[in-house]
Length: 389
Image (cartoon, rainbow, N blue to C red; front, side, top):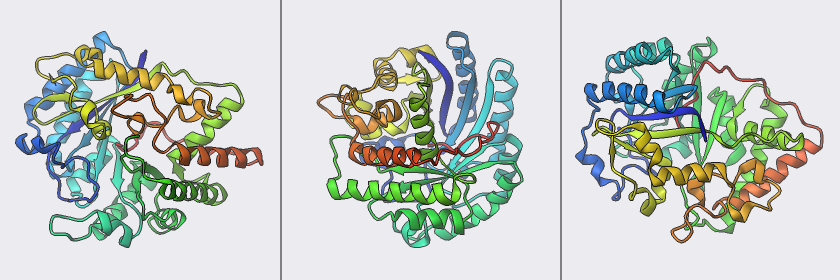
């Protein structure tokens, strides 16, 4: 195993100014969040830099990205984050390439944060689910008021900075049961002017199958969106699921299978100093909550890497599940997201809960490529960070 990049999710603020209907973080199982400090202490941020500096000695990586997350990270003062960014660059650059990213709900973006984003060339991931009606169904504040208008105002501020080459803005969009594929895609691209979209599946493990009608609708939405993107937008809009699938299919066709032993590893730093596997796996609750208790102050990165849970995840990233070995798309999707494969009985060695929809989508893309639509979008700038997932 070689760590190509390290993604550090910094829980800068452990509270949020929204109360989204499908939030995975503020749940009964994670009620301890209210016992932790609301804001991450400055001293802990400095401890993190030392933790990473020590990690580079035993596990050299090409790139480290610090992702400011929450809760809602923009509730913290930008001046505190600027001091951390400057110190991290001072202490780590020369040993590793350093980058920064911000994941925000977009409700509030101060001038100070905008200046910081430009200064540090941060990638910004912003949560928006489509038009006002759909977005405001799920993403409401603590008074029950929708957030669409405030998020759109933030986008109207950020997108000119993207056009000027200062930032990359990525919409993170949940494909829930009321998501209307092409209509919402067109709203985000044609109305909002977004150029980068990351489509998110609803958080489910393989113990939580959604049923055939939901999977059928999801597959139809993906195929219809792909066709619209391929016909109208493939050279100007990056939909990460679409571009990665096209590239993977073409790589398999030409015998260019990638090396699975090169991985991007991540961890989350909580405001009390604990180092934890990233939030994607919270839905695998019994497994997630049994991981080792580690702290950035009195343990080392090697302790995180060597813990059984992390080693299990590395294995799942490198190896395709047994049930997928004979699948024609095993080298394309590699079994899908590990969290979506989890069951209490068999761990991660299962097909994805979204396998039927993904199978239909991959076959659809394969058919389109076979028909001759092989042009790929131009490469995206590597100096701007993608948004946090």
